Length: 166
Image (cartoon, rainbow, N blue to C red; front, side, top):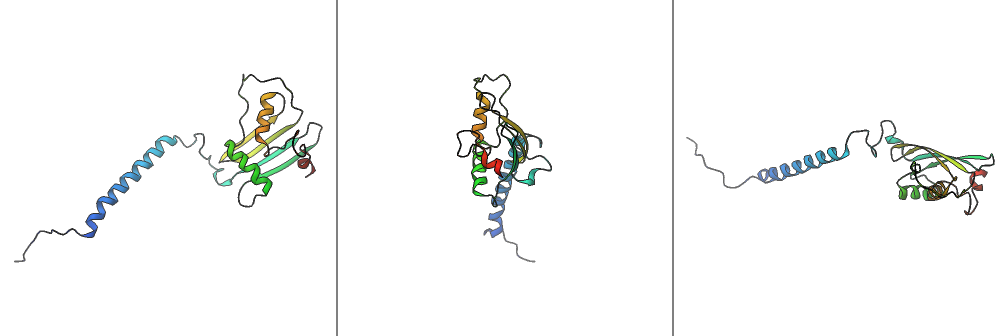
């Protein structure tokens, strides 16, 4: 009859199992928390189906108010020009194109000019469709915060002419 002894020396895999179990438990907990706080797939900040892989790309249609318009495409990434990198960095600081001025917001009645800009595209996986004007103090401030993504129609180095020339 074979002699049976109890094992007193743990095998190397016996020490790994509790560590692996702890890691799996932490990963499962982190995944669960992420799912809980992320909310439904359509929540703000999450990519919409079909636009997530498009990257940050915006089209800016600028109207100088005198009938001259220009269109510029702003593509952020490795192939961006120096001018595009500046505009992309500014948009990153702002968290993307600025939303409209809230309805009912009190604004100074200081007219900034007839210029308009319409911005469309994708930023941070979200569809963008915003119009910018210079019709009052709030809209002028909103526009100015977007420079250099939007041309500076006044007070800039070229008054928006460079965009119109291209």
